[in-house]
View 1 (spheres, rainbow, N blue to C red):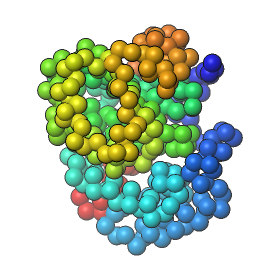
View 2 (cartoon, rainbow, N blue to C red; view 1 turned 90 degrees about the vertical axis):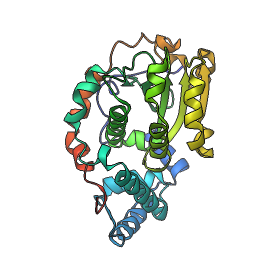
View 3 (tube, rainbow, N blue to C red; view 1 turned 45 degrees about the vertical axis):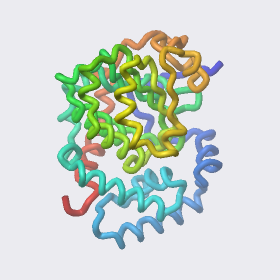
View 4 (cartoon, rainbow, N blue to C red; view 1 turned 60 degrees about the vertical axis):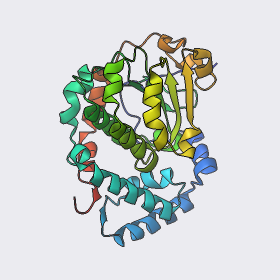
Amino acid sequence: MATVDISEEAFHLRLGYLKPETIEIARTELRETDEVKAEAIKKLRELLKATPEIYYKDDDAFLTIFLRAAHFYPESALEKMKSTANFRKEYANLVHGLQVEQVKERFIKGSVINVVKNCDQKGRRMLIVNCGKLWDPAFVPSDEMFRMLYMVHIAAQLEEETQVRGVVCIMDFDGLSMKQVKALSPAFSKRLLTFIQEAMPLRMKEVHFVKQPFIFNMVWTLFKPFVKEKLNKRMHFHGSDMKSLHKFLDPSVLPANYKGTLPAIDYGGAEWFPALEQQSEYVNTWSELGPTKW
């Protein structure tokens, strides 16, 4: 049984440290040692200087975000920086100039994006995206949902634990109706999946679809063409079978909403937003990064 100490995890970001066991994960999974890291940072900084069409910060901490996502291969990290810049340029209307305050009201009142206040048994953050009855597309249009997701991923980059261990996403379709299906357009599907697969410098370890009704098949028809093999292997469909979910996420780390042993979720954007606000300087800095010319 995993024991859950959530004191450091609930409603604020874990900044400025890696646990000893995380350092070991970084070494075995990401090739990270002090020597490899120092050499990779130096090389990526040189590559970035020689690539005038993209613009990023080049301090050690920032470059490490992309290097961890690329197993400390500088050339691969640069490719991720390029694809992220291309994505940001293509969807500049949504992400260029994105500031924390712009999403405040919908983040707090919208019930769409939530993060479980404890990590899973592998120390990974669990993001919940409520795509069913809790989502009112009239109040939170799909473009705004995407902007909120985008902002959460920027804030999550600040957690070194998350850089190394990766994230888990729970897509909750409980009560999905045509109202939500219409909002999940082909354009939204393509953008979301391009972001996850090509323009997100974080390790997406698992995506769990839960409580999806039959009507979900219409949504999946839109998503499926854009899912590449690597992500496809990490997607799991559980419907209402929570025992199936528990094969991946231990009941001891899940709330009662997913037949876990923890209390049902009674928190959301209102509790998490201050953590975003505290990091608004970093999030707002990102608003200009990516392409040199917009």
